Image (cartoon, rainbow over all chains, first blue to last red; front, side, top):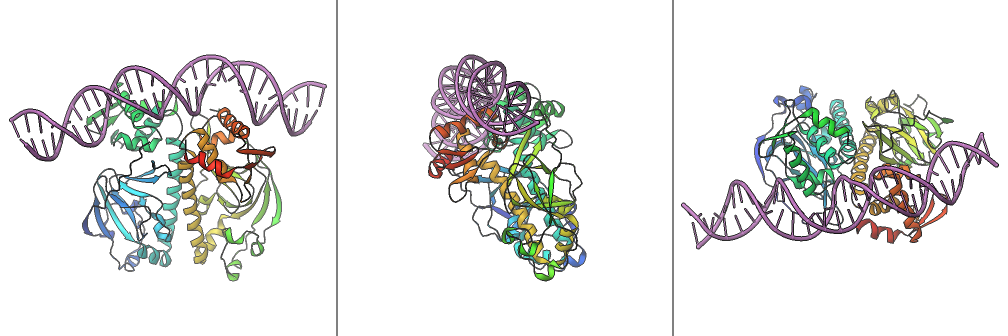
Length: 237
Length: 237
DNA sequence: CGTAACTTTGATTTGGGTCAACCGCGGTGG
DNA sequence: CCACCGCGGTTGACCCAAATCAAAGTTACG
């Protein structure tokens, strides 16, 4: 297990104030079904920002001042083990929410780090609390988010923490593919931390799947996947 | 992996209508800080019931008509794998809530089965929805419950899904001990399903810990634990 | 008292961990 | 421009913890 803890400093580029009304991912985002009048209640700035791979949205222990909706890219939530190792407990993608606990004023339970370049909206805690008191809509949405978080956590445990290394890797790919059977992948060390296996095993398995033609690496870490074959692997052995 | 799916029929004894105002676990229960006037909004029955070991509070796929607060005993939430096996994704104890998703009208995501004799309050979905619209208190509580569920899920992944079998078993005992260093334990098959190891390995490890004197079996599945020694095991190898 | 369910133990196999070397590539500085 | 790193990925050799297969205690109970 990797003992080194890379403390990456925050390195986000400010993209300007968000225009939630016109947000491209409105349906899947936190503010999905807010009404026009609801928006008028917001007068704290919601910042839109990009986060480079390796940079953090927030760290465990930071003041929980905001939560983040992921508008694009891939974010890992990591927890550090007493022995210094680390484990990735969830992956967040477009439409997901990071740092929900901030809405309750609870301390961040993870460190959130971008794996792919991330576009995110930073929503101050105060905005959430204000809105969640004023509107049923937002309340519902918040609960749904929480529900989603639990489901994801369980899925992580069951899908990615059970079975052989091959099966786990297969399932990981299946959670990442788009409808064209393609997906962006990431470093073997992170793969290991997600699946609870070593970097070497992760590498070996991915390499072998490539050799067997189940995966086709178009360009570095961009794969075309044989979805059906992966599904067999995922359930079978 | 165990392929057999034991469909246990519901076998709960009705204990009568609950008196929430005088509930012994008010502080830790869902209705913690409801006011007197809040209680007047409830006119659907909250049933208090006991559930025998092996019996289910609810099954995946049941109509999500109620959620359950655990007032005593131990409940396992299990998910079934595509290959027929099963994995326990969480353990619930006094003060915890099972079937939260019912509050959102979402289908149950697990089957909830009593491991030890359980005393529980069954709260109809309608009560939750009614109250959650009317009172801030309950809303807050619900969110906290959800937050708690996520934390538990993550802890399960990190603490019980990482490290050697010995370390996992040690951590499991540590999550179960009371302040006197004692705890009620349960069947090796369930231990395996919690920790992601086989029944045999679970048995071997527990047996060895007994031999080494870290565990002292007072009566069947009632243990006195050497907490410090277990903590060493939990972090170390 | 017999049978079923559960635990423990043994023998054997194996998947994946560990340790170490090597490859390929993008940077960097002489 | 090219030699030198350094980092991420891959591969090999070896070893061990846990899975698997099998059987013998234990306990509970009709």
